[in-house]
Image (cartoon, rainbow, N blue to C red):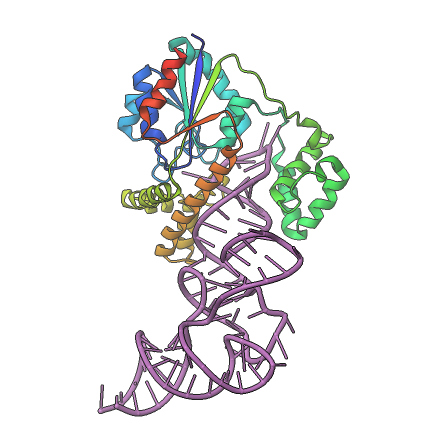
Length: 299
RNA sequence: GGGGAGAUACCAAAGCGGUCAACUGGGGUAGACUGUAAAUCUAUUGGCGUAGCCUUCGUAGGUUCGAAUCCUGCUCUCCCCA
């Protein structure tokens, strides 16, 4: 049997955590989290990290190992995971990766092009350009620096344009010249199982989970992080809405309502991303036998 | 019992004689996505065989070439007085 990475993905709130732990115990494997917000130590309640019991039942990696002040990215995650995997495969032929951050999962499973890091000052420069002169100034710059990319990007999405511009300026080469669009082969097998539920069922779970988070003290957690609200890591559902409440711009009730709505929207975006991925085999979380059978088929 | 205000699409809310299948927001749905991505951005939202046709603006009538918009009855909601 070959070393196999079992990827258990699905929209937020679908029930990945419970199943991943069950799966891990059954196979004696360890779990890599692919959840870009569970990386940060300061956030716990709002990101629904596994409980202490769950964490002690199975060894987890990439949970609360960063600070919200740290810089991190899908590319660094790819590198870190690939570095860790040989060690995990040394102990067990199966490793489970579970989470909902699609770009991070893709970085590990399909590879992400190697693009130099950007000087924060350069990023800052373009952010300012956007704020002061609007998106048209970004478009004009991109048209000059990378006409190829200019014809392909969503010209209404400033983040896309800024990213391209900062790479052009940092490297002196067009951003598009770094994009190979090839899948990278990995020295292990990858089996991807997607979890999903009826939309109504999923949304009901999300709404309920938000209420549970509130009961557990999400508001206090957000309040502690309020002074750091400008950090990108805190531009996160469950926190930003509370920041609005602390600002006095919305009511507490409204904030909670928005957390639910934004979480639902996030779940939808996740599903959109995966909809085109033909390698995913989809299951309802209750179809455990079917999911466990995958493992049987591997070994 | 008397007086006043109002009933618009899933919700809220504009429109006050034609250019209205109806502004806008919410919610829903669909989509994009190579670097802090739980981010950022887009489309669509009465029905249909979508050029175009059909049925809508509480309800029943009426006025008019033409009504969500004007008039009348009825039903319901809200507010004030009793």
